[in-house]
Structure formats: C-alpha cells, structure tokens
Image (tube, rainbow, N blue to C red; front, side, top):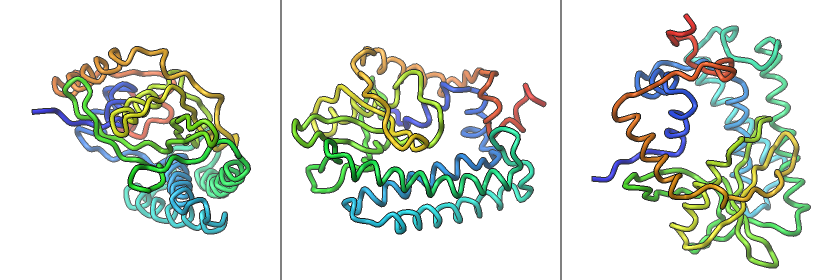
Length: 260
C-alpha cells in the first residue's frame, strides 16, 4: 500500500524535527503570529481574484482578506487569549504588529492586482476542465510515496505558451533552494503532461515576482529519494532538533525541551 503525505508535512520535518513532533504528532497548540494570519488572508484574496478571471475589484479582494483576517484572529484568540504571548517580528507590541499587518496585507493585495493587470506577457493557465490554474490541487506518487499539495499558480506566456509555476510569498525571505517550485513542476508534468523548467516566487512585499528560477538544476531522482527519506524519518520517529535562528519564529517553542 502506498504511503501518503503532503508537501507541507515533509518540509516541516526538514525544518525542525522537534517542532514537527510537538505540533504535528503531539498536536500541542502553537503560538499565533500576525505574519501567519496575514499570509493566509493574502493567499485567500489572491486566489479569489484569480478565480474570478481577474475581474474582481481591488476592494472586493480586500474584503476577502478582511473576512479571513477576522476568522483567523478569532481562532487565534480562542487558542491563546493572552495576545501578549503572540509572536511578533522585531520589537513591536503585538497590537501594533497586528495593525501594521492588517493594513499591509490590504496594500499587498492592491499591489498584486496592479502588477498582474499591467503584465501583458503572462496569464494564468487554463486547465483542461476550463478552470483557472490557481490553487491547483495535486496528488502524485514519488518513489512509492503519494504526495499531496497545491500549486498557487500555473502561469502561461501569452505568445509562446511556455508554462511557469508561481508561488506567492508574503514574507521577506526568498527560499535558498526552490524545493517547493521543483515539486510543483514535477506535479504539472504528472497531472497534465507538460514540462515546466522555470518558476518564480511572487513576493507580495515587493509587489512583483522574483527573476525566473531554473528548476532543472536539482536532479529529480534526488528529490524523490529525499521524499522517501522524510517519510521514513516520520515512520521511525527520528525527530531531530534544528536549533538556530528559526527558533525565533517557531510557534511551539513554548513546548520545546531545548528552550525551557
């Protein structure tokens, strides 16, 4: 029988085994963070705008953000009513951080829409069933492991028909290795039989995508092997800590035996 997992689950193990064990296995509550809530809201708004055929107004897309924001804030308050314990970036107070992210998220949506409406080269690909290729779900098998995930966007060049995978990032850091984009490209090949050699991150803080990233540099067979090893780590419960700078943004640090 094939084993099942998800891209987010595998990347969580890779970041820190202890954090994965605390949050995903023991299911201990994670501290809320304004950047997470902002990210969910921006993704929901961008997805809604794309699936409208890019006909939705900026104001309507921002309303999606506001609705998601209220829902996620309510969930976070229920888990941790004491907002002073929430994670923040820098030395801000939590409430100031939330205000900045609420306003910043709406601006990011406006910038996202403006950039894409002005872009006369790339548009979202139309799937075989006629739907817009936004938040495209996939379930593919790599080395006997069935991996699930969602592609933020599959873009198509208007003139050449070239395909490119795009992932929306609300943070400030571009991943050192485009692992996620490579997996998306492999999934596109499996789902619709098309080759994708390039990808990009749309950095909402910058209001534009990164320069195109070559997704052929890493051996795809190595990626499949990596998937299998991550699954084996989870099955054997070989969860190792990865203490470092990432601990500052770890939601389960309050439960971490290394930090008590």
